[in-house]
Image 1 (tube, helix red, strand yellow):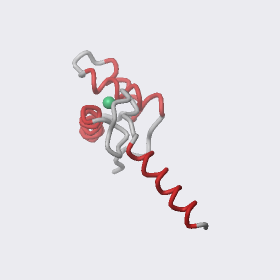
Image 2 (tube, helix red, strand yellow; image 1 turned 90 degrees about the vertical axis):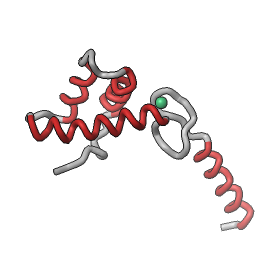
Image 3 (cartoon, rainbow, N blue to C red; image 1 turned 45 degrees about the vertical axis):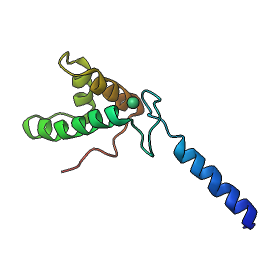
Length: 96
Ligand SMILES: [Zn+2]
């Protein structure tokens, strides 16, 4: 590949990384899909799911909709759950 084109492409790639935004609230983030608050809520959701699965036969989708309906769930977690339902994300669910 032409050296100049190559360096232009790497600059472009760098800018894209720097301009990453939270997929939920569009707040700027550093190389992540979520901002700090949503990242925290997301991790919490994943951890809680592992606990729920031990106690109940519950699918990821059912679990997310429970979070969404639960009035005790914080707004951050609800937003993450709604996002995960919409995006149909499954790949990062811990398997055991
Ligand atoms: Zn966010």
